[in-house]
Image 1 (cartoon, one colour):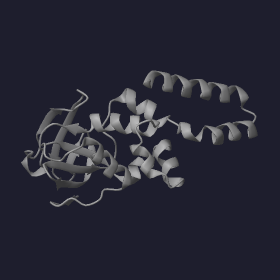
Image 2: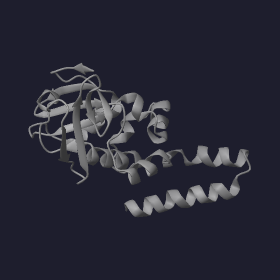
Image 3: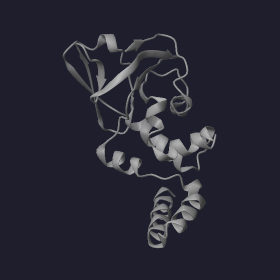
Image 4: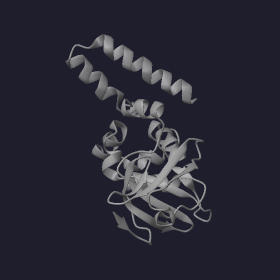
Length: 186
């Protein structure tokens, strides 16, 4: 685990997550997934592969909606410094989403957040405290939907691939799911 005091980039998607929170003059702790963790999710991997990482900040995109949810699960409205968490004790905080975030310092394992390992701790930008994790802080329902998410801007590629594989019925189902997601976000 690396400990740092001055903020530096935590990857394009992590930086976007921090930027979305707004002015840094309010004490918040943000548990940011590593860049490699973001790339485990199809929508972010597709943006990376197409060189369109900045699209995550477009407020009308699916990636922005997903990032907003991740931000609400991974942000606590107070400063949490790893060194102030007693070794061997679990401390629980409420995130902006209302879900609980458990933090612990474990001998030999370091600083853990919901059993995820902090790769970098205690980065500071203004009054924000940033910890970089090897996973996402979120509830299980959102996790299940996140890992199944497909970038809707990539619908033509999906349609083309489905036709190649002769999966017309599945194609219709994918289109229906995407349409429902858009309707639920409107």
